[in-house]
Amino acid sequence: MIRVIAGIAAAVAGGMMVTPRTAQQPPAKQSEYLYLWTSAADSSGPDFLAVYDVRANAKTDRYGALVTTVPVPGRGHRTHHTEHELAADRQLFANDFGSGESFIFDLSKPAAPRFVRQFEQVGALMHPHSFWRLPNGNVLATFQMQHEMQGTTPSFVPGGLAELTPRGDVIRSSSANVPGVDRRVRPYSAAILPAIDRAVVTTSDMDNRDTTRVLQFWRLSDLSLQQSIELPNGPRGDEGYRSAEPRVLSDGKTVLVSTFNCGLYLLDGVAGTQPSATLVASFPRKPGTSCAVPVVAGNYYLITVPAWSAVVSLDVSDPRHPREVSRISLGPNDVPHWIGIEPNQERVVITGYQAMKTRVLLARFDRTRGTLTLDERFRAPGSTEPGFRMENTTWPHGGSGAGVPHGAVFSR
Image (cartoon, rainbow, N blue to C red; front, side, top):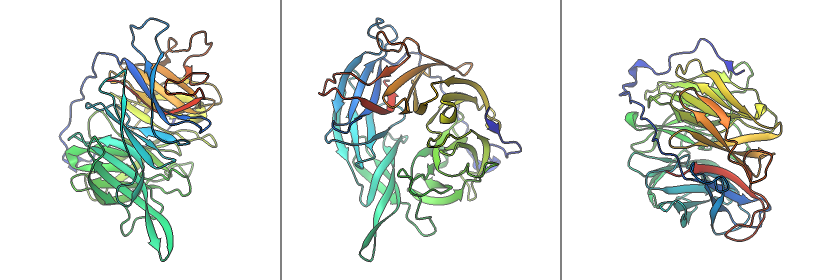
């Protein structure tokens, strides 16, 4: 069971002055393709985007079939985050954190994507990590760090944010390295709240050299840092460290923030001068793993919990008291990490580490009841286990080494 923390404050302060948004119904049509941002397991091959056929009406031997791959320049990289869902313009941003490079793909022809462009630094900002769409269609990117010279010695300091066009051209950028900010801060991911002119930014160090409990609040209109707070720890004593992924709930104003240390926090006063966070739930931790990527689907919040080798569905209709309603339990050495949800919220893609390193799974999601079940149909021909392992495959771009998927999104 999750640990639910009692006696917390209300989800949204009365003074936020936010116009409530009616949650839109997801589209009825299922996605036809699944895109997996993949690196070569032996580092000898290029990163590539793999396209799989997930059409619901496909013949049995075609459901989950590999359609094509799109390689990018370079070798021995470390594929990491893509955008968490495919934008309306069907341009997909994906980063390779090992090299500090990011790549843009055009998915306007869903079965035949093409590589468009790559980019690295924006001014002094280095190692982009996460990408989020703004209402104008541009992309807000978090950058982990930037160079600073102390005498003749280079060092790394907090990175910042940048607004980019869908082609990756820089509109503006802003540094997180301002007086009073902990030098160990590394902008990681973000939640966008345009109605109140705010972005909530988490600050974990991808290289795990340092850890803080810092959470930041930026003004969207000019990309200026407004406040920084520390997430409070809970009964275990470390829940607030390594802030990970903030998510806006379906009302368009309530924000939950997960930490890699498996805490879950509800934010209050996001638009004000004294924002705060309250621990509302926590999960057990497994050494060497981290609670990771969540998604929001209506009144449900889905998150990976490695200590259980599970993906868990929480009812967050009362965000002060998250309640588990379902979970998918995987093998004892499976570490689920990334999850992405189909636009119609009927399927969830899962990638991970350890025994899941080369494996991709699909789950079925009942958005009325919040329940999760493995998609047993999505499996390799003749396989005794659900899902596909990206092994023993001759890739269309060349080579046959195992692939390691990370970021994953469905077509629109």
